[in-house]
Length: 130
Image 1 (spheres, rainbow, N blue to C red):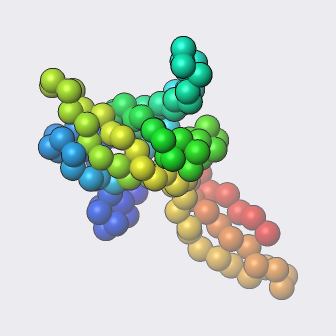
Image 2 (image 1 turned 90 degrees about the vertical axis):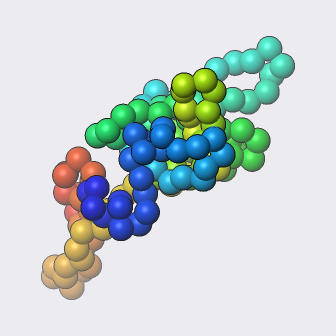
Image 3 (image 1 turned 180 degrees about the vertical axis):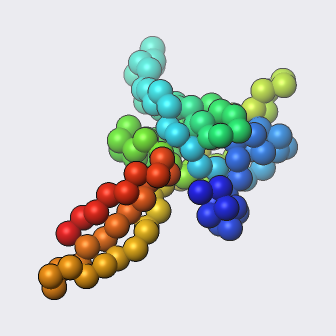
């Protein structure tokens, strides 16, 4: 999986955490603990943590990104995210602009005249749909 991601210029969470403030990056990982905490102002907030084999990084969504990304973040266990690195002190997070579910297409086969698509999840589980 990491080779497939690297071919698409998708870096690890560890690499993202070492980038400079404001750098635009694309990462992929498990979407851990997405949440929408209440606020006094009534505004909408969306946060999650992305985790891969190297590290984890906190993620925040603001403005239009909340509306554009909310359903994906709340429903997808593994995602690809694009955004800008925010640095405060020694820590780093990502302010996400775009996100999409991570799926890897395996192979398509013909069976009794019907097309079947085989998808392999990042965890190595193969699913076949007619």
